[in-house]
Image 1 (cartoon, rainbow, N blue to C red):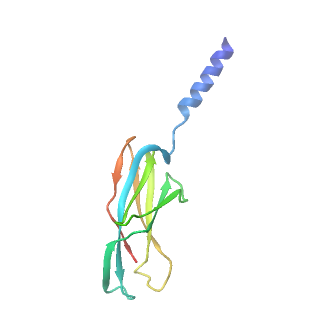
Image 2: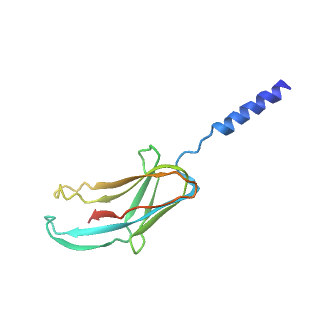
Length: 131
């Protein structure tokens, strides 16, 4: 009898102590659009601006430091990450850095998002990047 109780307690503890981390496997989503601004070589004259298709948008789950997934924007600059669980996420795109025009190192345009509801739909403000 005591053996059954111990097994039951261990199984119960392992079941209730498992908290799902941020990531895929849920019902929430994060979506938005990427807007590009084109400048001349000196970054003084705006030559074009538009919602950019085929731009890569990245997501990092929780406190992680590595990219967990990425998506390409649609024809209208829109993107969406589906099937997310509650938790914190970092969404980012890469942009040219107008403060360092002669370096080819891109800068990240990043936003942190906190999903608090099981079926939450988060719509972000437009990411504005320089191309």
